[in-house]
Amino acid sequence: MSGAKISTISHGSPAFLSGLLVGDEIVSINGVPPTDVIEYQTLVDGPEINLEIRRAETLSLIHVIKSEGEPLGITVDSAVFDRVRTCDNHCSFCFIYQLPKGMRRSLYVKDDDYRLSFLYGNYTTLTRFTEFDLERVVSENLSPLYVSIHVTDPQRRADLLRNPRGATSLRWLRALLDEGIDVHGQIVLCPGINDADVLEQTLADIFSVYGELRTLSVVPVGVSDFSTEDQMRPLTTDEAGATIATIERWQQVGFNVLGRALVHASDEIYLIADHEPPAASDEDLVDLIENGVGLTAAFATSFQQRSRMNSLGTGFFQSVDGAPAEGYRLPRIRPSQFHLPFLKDVAIVTGEYGAVTLRRMLDTAGFADVTLAVVKNRFFGGNIKVAGLMVTSDINDAIERVNDVATRFVLPDVCLSEGRFLDGLTPDDLIAPVEILPTSGFALREYLEKWRTESLKP
Image 1 (cartoon, rainbow, N blue to C red):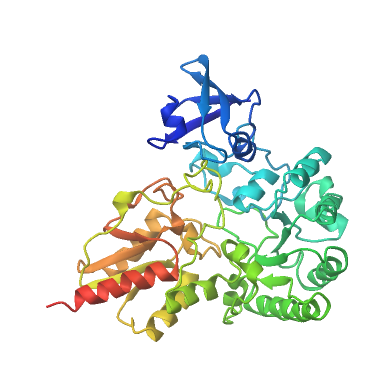
Image 2 (image 1 turned 90 degrees about the vertical axis):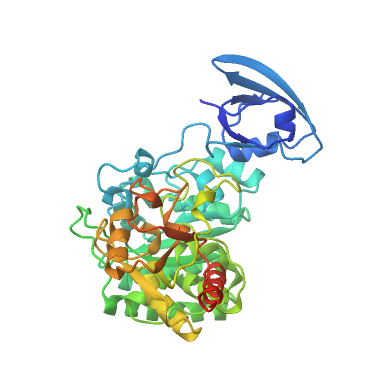
C-alpha cells in the first residue's frame, strides 16, 4: 500500500511550521497507515500528531502540535491511498467501454468503491461490498451513499451487470437502509431492456422493499459512436414520454404513501421527450444536480434570482484524477483563465441540451443579443449532447461557426478538470480566447450584466 503524497502546504499552517514539504509521502499517522482521506481526516483531527514520512526514500518521524480540530494545512494527491476498488461488472451500457483510445489512462478506470461514492457521489453497484465495508460505513456514518440499482429482478440485474453477484448484491442496500444510512438510488434506463414493464416492476419493488431511499434517479443511457453493444440505443422521443408518464404516476404514489415523490426523471429524459424539465422542489434534489435531476430548474433559478449554486461536475469522471484542493474535488480551472477583457459581442459555448434552456432563459432576461455557440459532440457522437463532455475539436468547430473576432466566447468550467478537457488538451488549444465561468446561473448572469455595462459605455 502506498502512502498519501502531499501536493500543497498552506503557508504558516501546522504542517508548514513542522517542516513538511510538498512531495512528502505520509506513511502512517500515530502509527496507523491511512487508507483514504476519510480515515486521514479523522487521524489528523487531534492536537498532537506523529507523522511517519517518506522523503527521497528515507523514512522519518515528524511531530506536529496544533489545536484540536485545526486543519493540518495540506492537501494530498489522491482520495484513496490503497488500491481503488475497481468494478468487476461488465455492463453493456458502461460509458468507460465507450471511450475512444488514446485518452488519459485515469479515464479508463472503472471504480465500484463505496468510499468514492461517499466522497464524490459516484454510483456503486455493491457487487464488491462486504460485511467489513458495512461495519465501517455504519460506524463512521459514511452517509449518503449512491447506489446503482438499474433493475430489481435478480436474474435481470445479473444479466444487465454481466455479473452473477448482481443478483444478490442489493441485500447490502437493504442492510444499509436498515442501519439508517441515507442512500440515493439510480436507474440507467436502457430501452428494450429495463424500461416499460420492467421499469414498472422495478419501481413497484423499490416502493415496497426499499422505500427508505432518499431519492431514486432515472437517467437515460448514453450511447457514443464507440459503443460495440448492438442492443444499446438511445431512448426515442415516444419512449422518453412514456417513461415520464410512468415516473410521474409513481411520484403520485410516493406522495400518497411516503409523503414525497421518491423517484425522479433526469432533465435529459424530459428534453428527449420535448418536455419542459420540471421545477425542483425536493430539498433532496440538491444532491442530484450532478446526476442531471433538477439541473435545468436550479440553473434557471440561479440565473433569474441571482442566487448562488454549486459549480457542477461532469456527470462522468469526477474523481479519477486525484484529490482536489477543497472538499476533495479537483479544481476545474487555473486562475490565469479568468477576467479577459470584454468585447463587443458575447457567445456562450454550450452543448445541444444546454442550448435549449439557455436560449429561452437569455431571451426572457433581455439578453437576446447574446449568441449561443452550440457544440455538436462529434468526438463521442451518438446521443452525447451534454456540456460536461465537450472537447477541444468540437468547441473549435462551434467557435469557427460564429466566426467573429469581435466576440468574446464564454465557456462553462463543467467540461474541465484542472484546466484540461477530456481529450487532454487545454483552453490554450482553442482557436479563440475564452472566458471560463463557474457552471452556475449566478456566475453567468453576473458576467453578462458586467458585459452589458461595459458595452454601453461610450
